[in-house]
Image 1 (cartoon, rainbow, N blue to C red):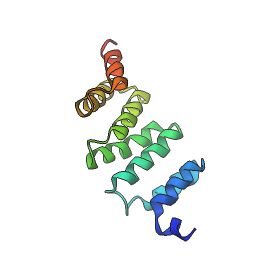
Image 2: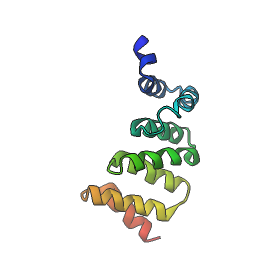
Image 3: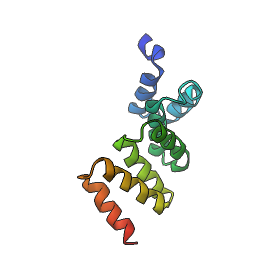
Image 4: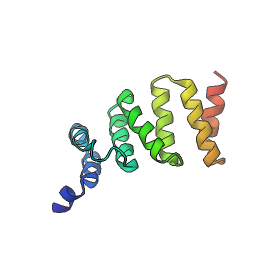
Length: 119
């Protein structure tokens, strides 16, 4: 148990895994200033908010994670979904294009891009 307190990101992941989303948000907020330039932390926090259907609060975390590592396909995929949830079509299209630039064979991004561009 001591390890979880020495490694706050591990504790945050455990709260998430255990479905303790309210606790994860609270705990994550308390760590935010210390981990504001940590890609993994930003991704986890964005995921927590996305899981609780709070796309508006998830977006800044995914944006920051993208700034810190713009080649993370998983982050770009979730960022795309957040833009879709917020009805931000152009931003979602941009994310799909970025994914395809990194991973041209990504069929999910390809078909979503085609669908969005036809609307």
